[in-house]
Image (cartoon, rainbow over all chains, first blue to last red; front, side, top):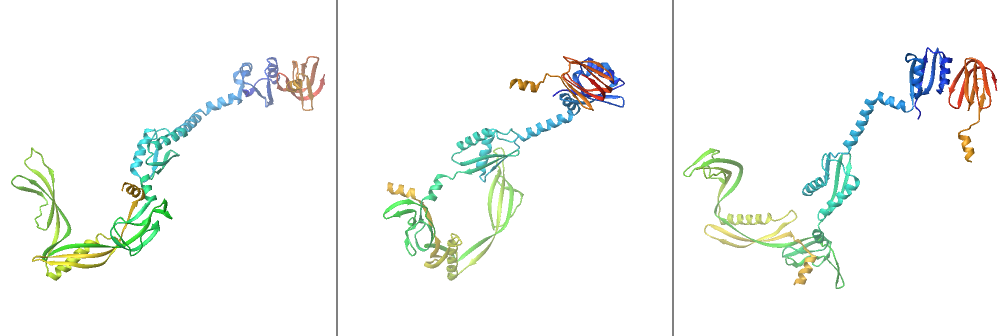
Length: 387
Length: 76
């Protein structure tokens, strides 16, 4: 690109000016003579010679061409250009800084561990982003270090944020239980209902089963040969039997909590107590004590006494009422063990012994209950081998 | 082919193109005289005189000249 100038020359005769240019072999183009002014395009290197000939006052640069133009434009706009270049560099710099790291998992323990590990490999807040190859190496290292807990990891950069997606590894032991298991009875029972989803039923409704006996087998049998295993899955309900012995005195107190709590703070001296706060004197309380200050150089202890206030009713019952109360208490003791889909089928008093101050009642219950339990087939086989 | 290409890129022959508005000269030797009414040019073989009024060399290069103005006569 040639460095050239458009100049304007005044107060010089055109013919003299052209003669000078010819003599000096100063090459030019675009000669124009308008209103006693000469307009001409010359090479930048000849400008000084022309200026010397015409005089400084009579020559004026109108325009630049070539690299000199770029140079002049740069000097003219250098603040803007430098600001622009600096802004671009700043944006580039900031876009290469990590401002946030997010691990997508519900497992807080694993997430904390990964944060620490990522920090160790340089993926942390306010650090430079890593290249594609570095990220791949870090992923590989993390997977190797956590081969027991991680199945897969993906580190993606979204703007200035790293998003880490992980898939946790399902432990082999758990997988094994799910993959091959027998459904066994959790209690001695009479089977009342089977809703089978997977596996081979060994027992049917109205069969009696002992605790641990297989109801649905996970073994896949063809002929007399076990050709494979699966996971037995079913809902099995049975009749289970309980006996409950309850003693009810003819005279008894029944306590019900009021929800009221009093904190009693006091200094415990060897011979007396000095209440500081919350004194409450009542027989209907259950207290818990906590020593707040106990130092060998102090001759007292600071104690906090938490008092829960109860209301109580006194009951005097006859033999018949005591029996009803005993059955009620026995039923309640069974009911607390049952789930929503379980219930007492029947109950019967087996034994009723009357003493002078109390009655002792033994109640028999028939209960409709879920009797599902599972047994790992591998364990069964091992046990069989050991046996 | 090499010679053809060389002559195409840098043709050493003298050339003059005359139109009513301009005279274009290629590969001239030297400008010997210049004023508003006469421009004399020396080539290797001969002298060329361009007569006219308000004659101006509009483009001046090592090999090339472009003369404008009102032409009366060109002596070749």
